[in-house]
Length: 393
Image 1: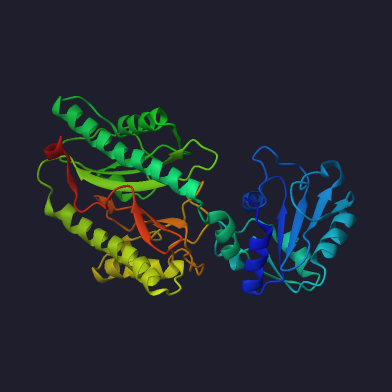
Image 2: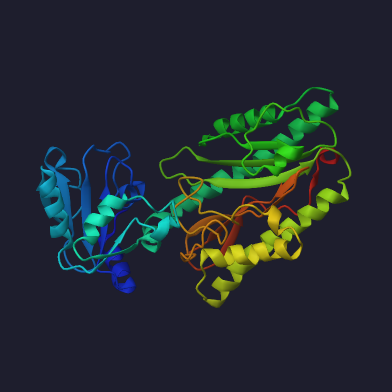
């Protein structure tokens, strides 16, 4: 829910003169959410909403969509011609010297970069310094309320249960001598999600053998065989307007006794995962500020020290929200150096991996820091060993 008082308090705390929220045809979904725009309310004309650190907000809307921001406080400027739009931007900026926008210097955080370069140039032409709204977005879009936290927990129960169904299905089909493919397992999981009122943007990853070594493998029709190594990565949320994703990865061996080559790599990955979790717990227990890149650093060091750094080919984790890859801080010092704060009431994955030509191991958990700074690992306890699937079912 839009909270002008809270936003202005945050701007004052950050010493920012204002927050200019701009959108064109729904390209800035972050502005849409902060401003409580209805999902079906996307117009076809540009609008801007200036929230000053102190004082009354100002709106800039097109004449044929003049009611676009009527649900928000503040006085209204209406434009028709492009010249009037540009003059309107100047009027909204007023005497502000520093303004936050959905902008990322050098596009370091692509999830945040929602305002086009030309609009940034227009704002800067008025002598205004544009700063990233990254931590503002976290506070007012990526921080979960209690309902969202409960929706995430509900989703986590069903995603956790999906693994048990999948492993049992594989074991029973193999034991009966029937063919079971990667896609068969993915379809089973999707049917489970559907039965429990869940939705997702893409089917899960089910990768056997070398396919498990491809972090973004597109599940195919390869049959699963006894003694194969299998990775399952799945994600879904409750089909609710405020649903929050659960995103988990487990690995299993389709035999009774797990070969040492799999278990050895898994234990390195699990130690790295736990180092990341502990880095978060330690920072919040001590009341120390923590940035996303620092969690990646703690996790990656374990894999680097074990000699597999070149095989850890993605960041440690990503923000989780109404999208699987959310709009808060990522645990990343590889693809970007994410200097956004890891905030209370935010949710993110920790999912290190080692990817080899023959097989790959990833262990993914979701981590939530509650309003008191307590750290929760959701989706059941973290995996402790490679599952010996044929011994379990």
